[in-house]
Length: 157
Image (cartoon, rainbow, N blue to C red; front, side, top):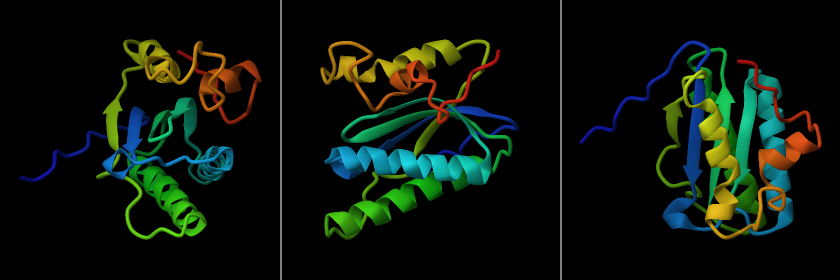
């Protein structure tokens, strides 16, 4: 059965999820989280997308991003996933796929679901019992917003 076509739109805002193959860990050390965010920063400059929210979990990633070209979403995600896979496989002497299937994305209507989606993403570590509260998970946009980190874009509705 063919896979469902991805819905893309001009200036689209998307909740993107990428999972580790067979739910394997994609982040094993603190330096892995740091490398992934460094790669995100590189691709933000290259494709000029806005990152409103993210959460890096041990075996998957959530991003809430807005692209200004409907075809940039797949380019951004291909670049992020490929770059991080090359890093990970080299560091841990692995070969093959790191990610399960292609990334999943859901288009978000700014005025309807955006705030709820951001809350869902940033509270993910609490639901998974990885953090007691939203401020203790270092690899979430919530902490980056508190620090006024430039990786996160301010949302204007």
